[in-house]
Length: 631
Ligand code: C2O
Ligand code: CU
Image (cartoon, rainbow, N blue to C red):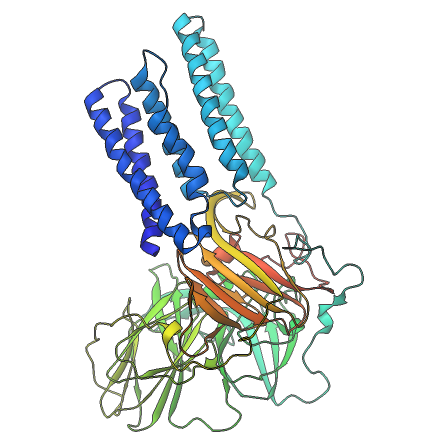
């Protein structure tokens, strides 16, 4: 299916190329030109096939294929040429179609498509009339060269002016409330009388069970491979210290910012903390400036693998190292055997980038690190992807199970061998096995980083070629879920896309939601207690690990096929190009929450929206005139 998706887009490219070549030939070489035009019909056919297949999967995937691709195609093929100049005109029509296809492919318009669908034929007509008139004028020889120059520079000026205008219009305001923009289907419940979310804190009236301090500072550091990096760290460690607590404990973390100029926060990724503890700069708190501090308190009520990271200028701050593992051990049963968090991250350094794995207490390493593990014991490897991109792992030397995804145990996990485990950016997968008396090795599928476990802490194991992709949608034992008989109170459809254009004053590849970028993406509005269904459709070329703060999503279906294995809960769900996921969550954690792509560069280029409970408001703001940056 993804194949068809890509196919449709590449067909547009091929079409453009062939048409462009034919157009460039102009009236010369009629045979060659005709051949090219005929060849160009092949991508047209491909694009139509792809469009048809995509419609059958989900009409949203193909929504603009038909209304926008068909008219210019038809025009290009059957454009009635003026008498006497058939070839030139046909080629022109084709060139127009090619340009339009390219634009639509890389900058797809958002629904409703009526306006663009009507604008395209109108433009085509205008283009034809203008060209015809121009030709008449030229043929009359009535236009002096300086007029030609004037017309040309006038047109160029208009283009530049239009560009400048859209650049200026795209500038984000100097300050704005993160939660005061348009909503999906209703007006804003929260006005002057909304509940202030800064009051939604964790328990403040009793002694915490655990206390930690995280001090953010700039730290020149060296990776195990010798690369020097200008890191930003918590407590001078890369990644930050692993926080391990027990389920039910009241955790208090004091964040101190020593010298990170832009300010720092801590977001507890995957932990459904009360809203005011969520660590989102400009929404749930102000970024902590150098010299400042902030105290977080929350009850770790679910056992599982989580992580924490700064949520101020996330793309840069996480990339530089302001993150760490957060593990909540189950209330009962102390972990027997080995329980290891393995954090993967891509570090950028002047002498090249390294994708490294880190174990608690160790330095990030781009090669294989060794650990001694007693045979016969249970091993739990908690894979945490602190990166923006999907990371594939291979575990060889032992049958294993996927015990949990995003901090929620799977039911009835069965043994796997060699399956490739892909962890979305921001996601967590726990692998468990019984330690054999031979070496076991976890490797990145791409890159050299790995962890070798063996009875002696030495030894070697040739990395096995990873097998098929592990599919969470059909793994484990089905079980009833709280939403089975759910009548959903709301249904939102979220179309993930891309387009070229200006974002905050700069020309960029914008990552869009429903064709819009933050802050213009409509907010998902809910009422406390609502059961909410969301459909994600990805019609862009990249993966989008969608992360909802403060809630877990139950995955209902992928590409129209219901999840058939264990209930699959996720807080960071990777939606690949051409995929459609349906998820559901209960709106049971009031406040204002982020819902964004955890490819943090995408989030920073528009792919960010909010989930807002009616009747809540934030006293904080983001923008240039505040300390808080949008992403
Ligand atoms: Cu892990 Cu909004 O982020
Ligand atoms: Cu994305």
